[in-house]
Length: 123
Image 1 (cartoon, helix red, strand yellow):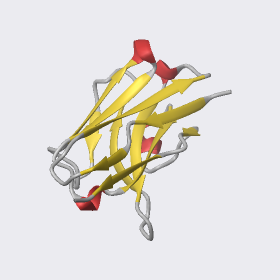
Image 2 (tube, helix red, strand yellow):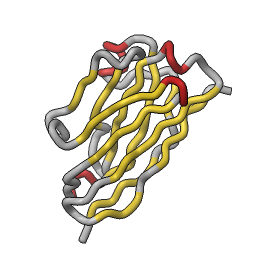
Image 3 (cartoon, one colour):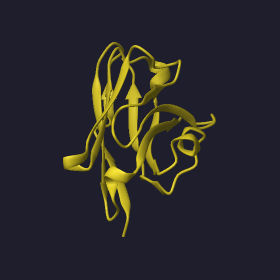
Image 4 (cartoon, one colour):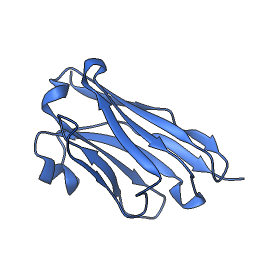
């Protein structure tokens, strides 16, 4: 059964850091582009960052550019999201998603979604 599992969320103070992980199984992970999205209560889902299957093309949303870094290790079927200088407005449930079409992934279309991990930034 194909699945994505996120981990690494938690409570952090403003200015702090977290690293999220997204582990894929049950499908050819290295044939898929992976994206991170987030959704805060009462808000629409937001694209955060995407990386293509070969880790040669990375995209960042304006709200996280310069603070977040996406990377992947296909040997471990894992994509990471390093989040630095976190702000209260980063509070949301973070999801990873997979698609074999990078353009489709960019607009939130995915073959597989994870269950999400909560990130809370608060003092």
